Length: 508
Ligand code: UTP
Ligand code: MN
Image: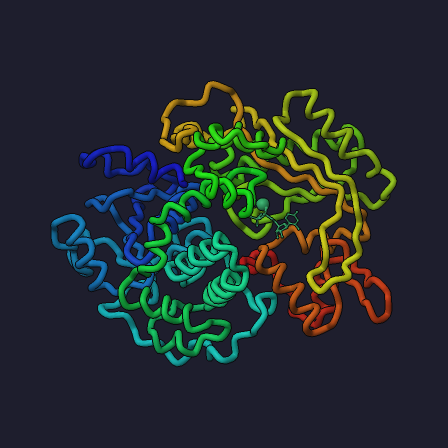
């Protein structure tokens, strides 16, 4: 859940003064994001993104708004939606003091530039949505594997992919990996489209998209909602599974067992007298902190702490932040680091020494070390990741915690919201520290950058097309019984005959 909308929602009907967001870096500019078709979650995400970059985003529409930004809406649709929401007629373009009515393209370009780009005709909403233009990519040319496509973080079909991802999650909660993959693959294709899907007819031509997915897409395009997803979201099973699987160390099977045993909220878990793993115990203890997104700023502070600890033992140690942050995400559920050095001998005992040192300084709330157990990638799925790893929960000192965090209401054990400010002067953050020999570093970097679906597709492609097995240790040729060495990620793509996909386009 994102901090700003949560806090604003607590207020009853806002007074005009409430409608003005705090001033940002660009005086005179005030963005309003239209929730219609965008959805609350994406609106919250985009709001937080813009605010971090210094843009002023108004929570409500008011006279002070200068740029109204919407996604997949015509000007007519936005104006009548605003009229319904505010009870007054939206000003039409051309009227005095009228805001700009803009497509999301203006917003994404401004975020990439770090400043508001000037408004051009192509950014402005049209009276009615333009018919799909002929310069759109021919859908039949879409590449079948996610690793063959470019998938940016911010894309054009979020309203649809959000729903498909709910259906994918629900399928995984029901134990159906096949259906989960089906929904995930369809969502991934839509994320890679360089334009918004606008008609059911277009959806008909989408590859990697079965009948169920097409029906869902049609429903969203025509009605704006998907009844199946709405019902799932409202169901007790889905909500409980979401809650339980969000606990560190709890997978779908454990969550399902708890649900079957009658647990419906976190407090019930105590009543069940469960045998919890150390990991789950720590996950429950720090549940409120861990469910808050980690910001990029906080991830940078954690990197400083980790680097400082490692450098006490190996001054020229190499450390790289991977996972979602390397793909350009501004928030994550954890922070992932890869640690390596050209001289492998310096790595022996390093992680344990650094972790013990951080522990002695009170920086760790939990840690679990996994020894290196290198299993060569022999199966078509690539096998297990056997790097030496520390799964940790850091106590990030409060001076490094971004301010908005302490204002976010937590969740108490009975599942209700508690607005009390935490009594401790740190926030818990999940961190994975992974040590890799230098020769395996490019594979580990590729494997730990994700996204999970990109990795799954890369391994599927590698097996289907090259009969090689890939994991985060290497690429194995079972026929020739040899490993293929690589000095960079680019090397690996080249060897596989794939065009290089930069991390920012691996959000499959
Ligand atoms: P994460 O689960 O951390 O996801 O795994 P993420 O993309 O960073 O997203 P958030 O923001 O934290 O939720 C990062 C990558 O590391 C790989 C996963 O496959 C994923 O691609 N990974 C994770 C492993 O290879 N092994 C593991 O044990 C865990
Ligand atoms: Mn991560």
